[in-house]
Image 1 (cartoon, rainbow, N blue to C red):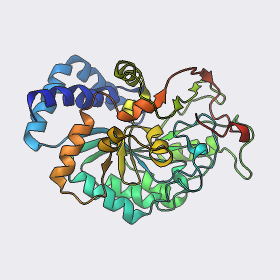
Image 2 (image 1 turned 180 degrees about the vertical axis):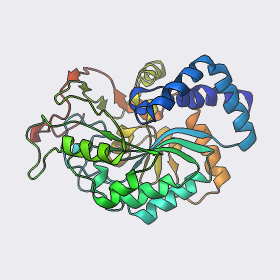
Image 3 (image 1 turned 60 degrees about the horizontal axis):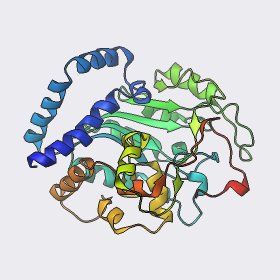
Image 4 (image 1 turned 180 degrees about the horizontal axis):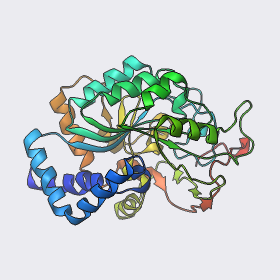
Length: 333
């Protein structure tokens, strides 16, 4: 890595690691006391923090991934109009096939050979608890030395079974629970069990985030309009730097992507040549060294080519979380 490449990697890779460590929803998944100590120390010595990672990179020649969310399914029990993964807008033809444990293991094993470590590794959907192999995936991830923290994001419509609960009882694991108790017009047979899930996890000693989130919070927003277009780079960079998507790298059906919305784009839109060049296919035949090079380039970019497809116009904020989709709303452009 030359001087310019290191400058970009530090700014868009290591700086993101710092920001992720100090991001509210992520910090809640750490042990509270240890996080406060860690947060205080790092704020005092940020320069040393960056120097440490520069030294570490020179030593191992592999990147650190701040956050990586593994998509185990794009199917969900809810039909949220403003879902940040755009799940309701998938068709039966472009949903990701339910990932089994063997495929997950192959993906993770190959990836871990090419990185220094992954700071926060998540299991997401859709609704991840729909996947019957989730307990085995969580257990396997927790055993990996190169994975520091593990989390699951759930809408609390499914109560964790005994096998999954056993896997969640691990010092590495936290569960992000959402409170949709107020939501009306849920799909037939679906009900929110937020309090029951919360009490079960707390009783079992599993760390959770958003434990006090009130039902009916108005903290959602509409998703950007998504369509192929060539926005000016200056505008794209501006949007990227204020977008939560810069924190949530995804691994979906073998592809490493910038954010949740990219999953929908790769499966629903015709992609530009620049986007195709940005894609990293973990399942493609390549050596660990080649994959490492691709990851460094990916983590060093100032913005994603997918950002050209996101249009932050007529955005609405302060919307009720979990509002369900009605048929005439079934579009995202």
